Amino acid sequence: MLRFIARRVLQFIPVFLGVTLILFLMTTVLGDPIRLRFGERAINPTVYRELQVLHGFDKPWYEQYLNYLNDLLHGDLGVSIKSGQSVAAIIQQAYPYTMKLAFAAIIIEIIVGVGAGMISAVKKYSFWDVMVTLSTSILVAMPVFWLGLLLQIFFGIMLKEWTNGAFYLPISGAESAQFPPAAHLILPAITLAAVSTAYAARIMRSQLLEVLNQDYIRTAHAKGLTGRRVLWGHGIKNAMIPVVTFIGLDLGAMLGGAILTETVFNWPGIGYTIFKAIQGRDYPVVFGGTVVILIAVMLVNLIVDISYAFLDPRIRYGGKQVSD
Image (cartoon, rainbow, N blue to C red; front, top):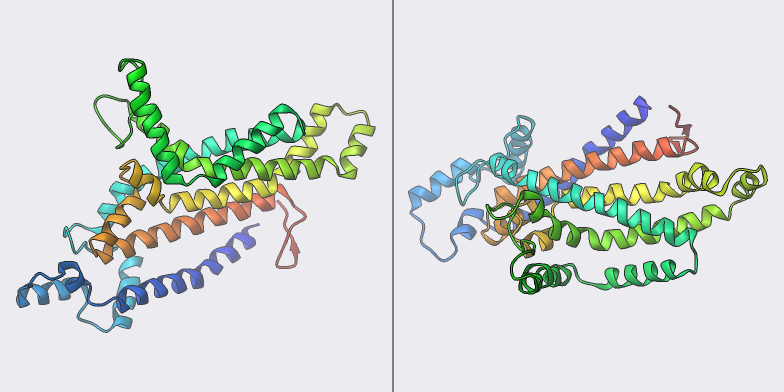
C-alpha cells in the first residue's frame, strides 16, 4: 500500500507542473497584468516600474514561472496587485469558509443522498422510490443560483413575514451578531449539496439494485442470513464503491470553491475571492488561489484512490493486487 501511495504521489508532480504551466501561460498571453489592473488610468512610470520589479513581471515568462515555483516551494504565493497584501494571507482568510461550506455540503450529500438511494433501491417501485426519482430529477435540472435564490426568498423573506420575524434564516454572509455561525451555513450548504445529493442518490440506487441481483446475494439468502444482514453485510458495502468515488471527487470540486453559491450568498470563500480577483485583474491572487485548489483536489483524489483500494481489494494497481 505504501508503494501504491508513493506511486500516486509521484504521478501528481507532472500533473501539477502541467496545470500550473498552462495557467501561467494563460495569464501571460492576456497582457501586462499591471496595465490590465489599472485599465485606462494613467500610471506613473516610476510606480509602474516598481510594481513590475515587485511582482517579477520585468523578467521573461519562463524565468517568472521558475521563480514562482521556487517561491512556491518556500510557501510564498506572491503579493496581490490590488491590495498589496500577501496572497497566502488572503487565501488563509478565505479557505476556512470554503472548507466549512464544503464539508457541510458533503455531510448533507452522504446522509440525504446515500440514504435516499438506499431507501429507493430497497423499496423499489414504491411511493418512496417514486418520490426519490422525482425529486432527484428536479434537483438535477435546477440551476444552482436559481435554487439559492428560491431558498433565500422562502426561508429568509417569506418565512420571516409568516412568523412575524420569530423564525427565519440569514440569506447572506458568514457571520453576524443576530445569528449563530451555523445558521449562516444552512442555506449555502443545501444549495451547494443539492445537485450532488441527487446524483449520489441515483448512483446509490442503481448500484444497490445491481448488487442485490448478484448470485452471491442469492447465495447469502439461501444460507439463511436475514435480509438486514445480507443488505448491510454484502449489498451496501459493494454498492458503495462508485458512490465513495463520486463523493470524494465531489468533495475535491467543492474544496475548489463554489463560485455561484458563494456569490449568491456573499459567502467569503475561495471561489468568491477568485471571482473578485478575476474582476479586478488581480492575477497573483487568481494564480495563488488556483494553485491551492489544485493541491486540495489532488490530495482528495489520493484519499479517494486509497479508500477505493480498501473497499475493493481485488482492484489491481500497476498489475499488482492491492492488499492491506
